[in-house]
Image (cartoon, rainbow, N blue to C red; front, side, top):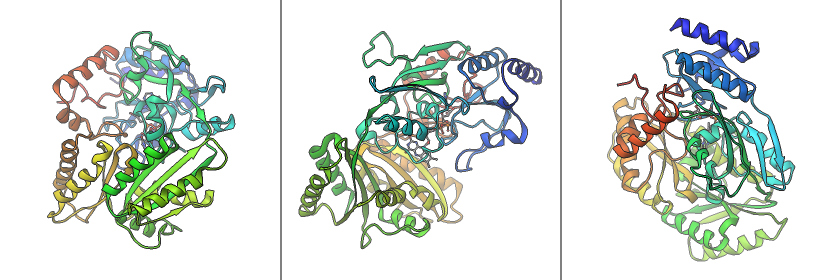
Length: 472
Ligand SMILES: Cc1cc2nc3c(=O)[nH]c(=O)nc-3n(C[C@H](O)[C@H](O)[C@H](O)COP(=O)(O)OP(=O)(O)OC[C@H]3O[C@@H](n4cnc5c(N)ncnc54)[C@H](O)[C@@H]3O)c2cc1C
């Protein structure tokens, strides 16, 4: 094996500069996940600058059977972008491939490399009066290749869809080192199988994404942001329905938070102020936007009056400046971080049909009602698309076997509500067993066939989505 790595290094040095290959301490930060919860070890880290270099690396790895872990911004939450602890894996970081190759306002697209940071892409779109609508808490660090490989969601899915709906074409290095140039900027292209969709959401297990054609939308000029207090989640769902009916595509985000979660955020986030005059059981953060400069706010205010008169909301406030809007969003986006400061957190990223979120929350609460010690549920997330980030603050000394029981309880309740145990963060290395348990043998067999067809040697991210071949 050592000889294979020596040959691999020698092959890399033929094409890469000294900064392109990192070992020892320099490789450390690529092996730990965002929250520092998962740690692996890497044989080395390689940082190509071009698609040709990626192709050279993958070809060499395939020849020598060296496992590769593609990595973008390393903000993934399921340990899919870091190596396992074996020390045998090579991290393939795309961070130096960060050029925007082309911007086309007439065609409403831009072509960028996989290592572009999401917020840089958003800014570039804004500079030409367009919008790239993917928005998530990690947007200052996560990279387009990672967003594609995880099929990222975020706060605007309700209006624009997930990452797979924001893409027109891809460039991918295949497991044998060949380059598939699918960088087509077409809205209509029914030429056989839609290969790009196979790579999107494949978490680095089928190919290395090196570039993408991303769709752009008109820029939104007026935004109206409201924070609403609600008595229960059934009313919250009714509010979403009414807003969708009345506003259709103008409704771009609906987030929900529990009263307990907002209390924690107010306690732990420096400078945070309560958005409402008194505590309420549930909170909604609602945002509407359109491309005109003004006129939306009075329409929205009229709708809020209606919701108020129907006793759907208990209280509410509208952001009257960009700073006020940012303060409201911070309470939501730093929600998870605030809870973390309270104690140890168990996190589950699940989804159900939006109308069944109240049922899910009620079922989970009933399920843990007589637990001792009892975890504190802090469910929050994207109510508009049914994605619940089910966090729990665990009491001190919470036993490990109960953590497992908690996961099974949540996933069972999610299944009973027709939902998914992996909504937007993916499977990674940490939900592999769950996938094997909860998907049918037909589905798993299809997964294995696709994997074998595209990566017959199993060098791309082994152990992610499917168990690594050597695992029992
Ligand atoms: C504070 C915070 C908030 C978040 N909010 C959201 C949210 O609202 N919605 C959401 O969906 N996610 C969210 N995430 C999760 C994460 O940001 C996303 O999954 C993001 O898309 C990952 O991008 P990345 O560049 O960091 O990928 P990485 O973490 O580097 O990698 C993720 C996966 O993609 C693979 N991969 C990376 N680059 C490539 C490539 N070029 N080719 C092939 N495979 C590749 C990796 O192997 C790995 O399996 C959040 C994370 C944090 C820390």
